[in-house]
Length: 275
Ligand SMILES: C[S@@+](CC[C@H](N)C(=O)[O-])C[C@H]1O[C@@H](n2cnc3c(N)ncnc32)[C@H](O)[C@@H]1O
Image (cartoon, rainbow, N blue to C red):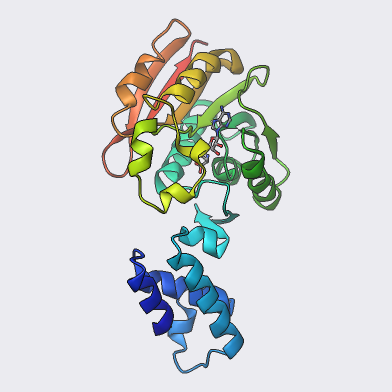
């Protein structure tokens, strides 16, 4: 493992030790820590070659999850790779928040939910796992990303997720809830992002000049797609919550709030329609 770790270190990869452990485990078809539990067990020349091939890919600047081909989201192993955003930890919080709010308002019965800007379909898969009677519609604009969402829906949706290609949700619904993690990074900030993040699709990151282009569209279209008393829960960038809440202040909205992420930042906005 040391050759691969040194390669990652010299390439400036973050957390080279942990990455090398994941890549070795992947080459051996094991869990991350299993090779460490059996340090005496030999690594075959074929597994060593696979490991070094993966290490070279990682050293070239690809996100670890692209090299592995999967990402753990709420304990679900989701297929990811070039062409789709790697799900982030705060989006697990968005998913859990949405499920908690829905259960609190409507109980654990059947519900229709929209996952807009679905990417890998992580939010849809997480909601289907947390809400066994929910039906989830996942809408994604990128055909390349949608293929990952379809695969993940088939693997984790229990037949309750449909994945659709689209760049808006007009004409869909009615839904009890809309969960959305739209692209929200201001366009001017994108060139300065970490090189690994720049390997992810620009359409997943770029929220236009002020970062709020898609956020604005979602806030405007949500009331018509929601049942009376239904809600929108949306992830936004640190600092955007006040502007996003302002978009949920019209007569269609009965209630609105911001929720904090695990770092104490207002990263999720919530709006409930009259009903
Ligand atoms: C920030 S990523 C979120 C992906 C996934 N929900 C997640 O949390 O990992 C935003 C996603 O929205 C998609 N997207 C961007 N504009 C869109 C639009 N107008 N309609 C539908 N999807 C859009 C992008 O292709 C990308 O997959």
